[in-house]
Length: 193
Image (cartoon, rainbow, N blue to C red):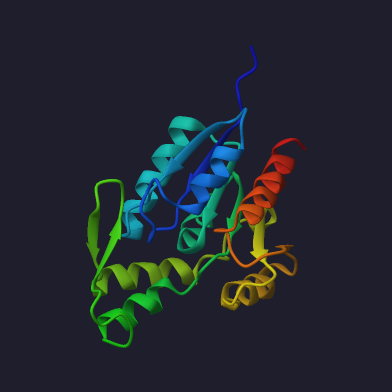
């Protein structure tokens, strides 16, 4: 019997597991082994968990959403899809620490048990370092997915600067049902090539 192809989904670091848009996309991809990983917010710990999941499941494809894109870009030898990548998490964390945004929100929720991460200088520095080398790997096996009506265009511009082309899906974000269906269709197409 032929083994099912597997897909490793790396959820956005700042979403709680079980309620994320990426998990809804995963549910649309019947017939594949689907592994959904809620990474830890510290990049060093998150990469350890991601590499372990890759060793255990040997995914045919890795799909990462938002801030998790910089993590997925560190992997070698596996095709990846990055959805609405956000390459400024380190800067965002520094802004939180310096009171420039979310001044009442120094703790970010994540995970299935309602855990919190404390935004620290070390965490922000790790993200910044990771994001600075995001485009240094084998980018020929990276596919970017963006939404045409999104108000957040920074990741799109950064991606185009480094890759030149990307898939643009009509809609505002991965939270829309039609956008989730189109994203799943694109992922399925990659797996069937």
